[in-house]
Length: 172
Ligand SMILES: [Zn+2]
Image (tube, rainbow, N blue to C red; front, side, top):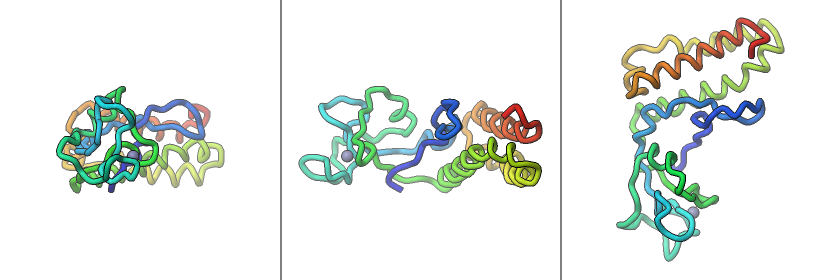
């Protein structure tokens, strides 16, 4: 996995058609990434090691930055190449892959809530059942996904908000 799709973790902009879910980065905050210029220290855009736009040639350089994903995206001076996204993921642990997939599933379900509310009971019930996967999580999973307790609460609040929107149409 060279690049991550970070939409589930982007802020909710309030637009119905395209918005993030504002989910916590959780264990993904510690994912290590390579970038030619994670902090905007040099002229030109930041590239991933394999990008063909990179000069003089691609591959990981000894002076490439190796930083956490959290530091990279929390940094305003990071100026990524539009072709490669500016970084490449070094590797993901099993927990990080599991959380990445779960966050994408939850984000997709969240996008469906306003439509399910309009369509009726059958859709609402089906969606509610799918969301249960994310409320009945065991302690081991929660600890692996969310190093910070507040992130776990943020996740629960998000799921509960979706569930209550489904139960009381008109508030979604
Ligand atoms: Zn590039």
